[in-house]
Length: 112
Length: 116
Image (tube, rainbow over the protein chains, first blue to last red):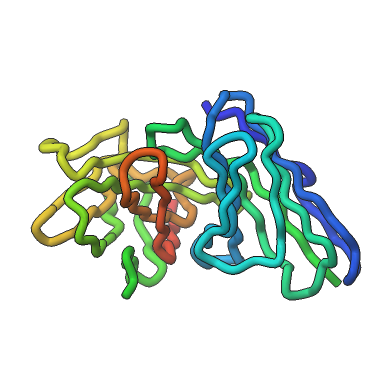
């Protein structure tokens, strides 16, 4: 059973606000990921990290930024939210030399 | 070109029957991995099953099995004895690039509805 947590689960916010989506895992996994998913659609990788102080952009361009200061924590920040950022954001983690990713419950973001 | 193709429209199955969800993939790598995830309406992604490209046996996990046909590049998920709780979206995914640089590419997903 994976122990990966995301907060908040739901967020409704106005345009122009700065937001941070939290993701934490207690499994000691080196690799962490952020995906963006519109309802009923596929997942798109927007950021990933192979360890502390490592961050990379994913396949889908995103205006968000991430940081990895601690192994267990991988927050995602939007400096100025826009309606086009409305989506579900899923965080995942995996061990360094395995491929199975374990996902958090997701954050459903709505920007008005 | 799409690396993972899931083209079935919404699938329906009667409770207690088996159902097959199709997935084809495209890669030139010799070493790769294939995954299936389940996503209920609550939104979380649940890992179901994994098949490595060098695995000779089809993977099985409880009621889930993966029908791996390497020459056809297909990795279909078979769910036996369907339950109402199996109603969800199902995503096929592929890992290329072994080791620390590996990432997953997901298909568009298939919606499965189990009828009582």
